[in-house]
Image (cartoon, rainbow, N blue to C red):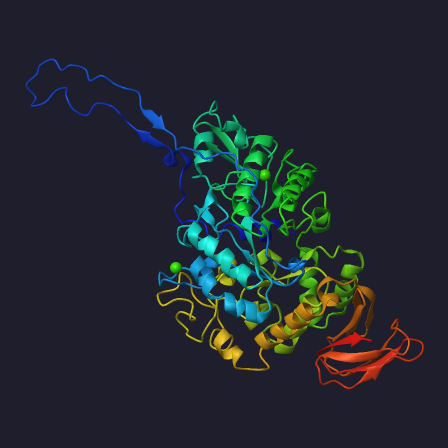
Length: 562
Ligand SMILES: [Ca+2]
Ligand SMILES: [Ca+2]
């Protein structure tokens, strides 16, 4: 994908004032400030003794953490239910400071449960330098101060589990914040104990360009590698000690009951040269080590961000699950009745692993605009897009606000416009997100697309999402089943799902005209019972296993076959 697009994912929220690395190092000058000449009467001043400055480096916590699995109360295959991706800063503010927090997420759990959500992905909640997206981690073992405390986290896990919901947290292995004590130490001198924890050269090498910029940043002690932002230096993941440190951090969260992780930028872990810095072979077994660790705990789930090779990182010897970036844009195209999109969506799970994670958009613009903007606010197309991925194999991830049709902010650019406060009410100022002033303007369509309004409307986008998730949660074939007999006929896509003795048929008509489709490969003389909508005409297959089915324009039908 174009570098200038990928560039946007981590940059826009950086602080407006760059913090120099040198400034992060605490320097206490012990030079004498008294004595010496005073009053101007001494004809021969005594030279002031000069003591060299003493550099006091911050303490680092790299203590080992042993596994202590508290167990999991979640249902088997819970990770085949739908997840909600939540940007905590933008979700719900519990204390009126204008920033979302963990207590706000706890207050929203009943809403999420009622919607049918089985998992939550929290974007980074660890303490960060950026004070926005959270991907510049300054402390891997503590909660971002704006978001609350470890006690709040423990309560969130407890309350989510009580509602049958798992919680996975974002984890960033590739880089830390520059103000992370590890990097402050590493950058202090070429001989520092932690020098080998980051990627250093005495002099910046030439010939590198990543995402349109030079990834090497020069400071007093040398040049360090930081392709995403000069305040996010890359760890040296050729150093097993660093991988082991991350494993200790992961155990820290797993021991507290976290249900797993979403791993950031796993295609960027190891670099081998100016033209060999993405998806290097070392990255896969590194994630395989991590996968083994996560799997050693009960009922945990992990998923990776690897836009350049989602299928490769889905291998069990790597992450086991990765986001299907290569599917996302085709879902929107199918919803808009574009033939190429429909066939791409139909074909995808013929070969792709059912362990892949699916979505129509996320917090990064490079993955796509908010769905509302992708379909220009067309409600019928919106619902078709939702049905397309919520009824398919994989683990679907809904981006917060998608279930109510939240649009981007009107007057923002970059990733900020898709990371706005959640629209809970029609209030143009605060969206019901905070009693104070929100940290960022609200979505452009808050007056109509908000939770309060949609809960009262049986035809709302929210009601449709709830219906789709009810199918996924009540029919194991939809959540976990095979993907069979996929076909495209004109603008209609169909496929069957089986799990155990349960067989379902899913039909989606993306076209704006009624279509009569002939569906084959059904059991002979089978009855097709309406699961969605429930008031459709009764249908059955003939002795050759073929059924004639009428599909209204832009409609979804799901049948249980008996
Ligand atoms: Ca708050
Ligand atoms: Ca790296």
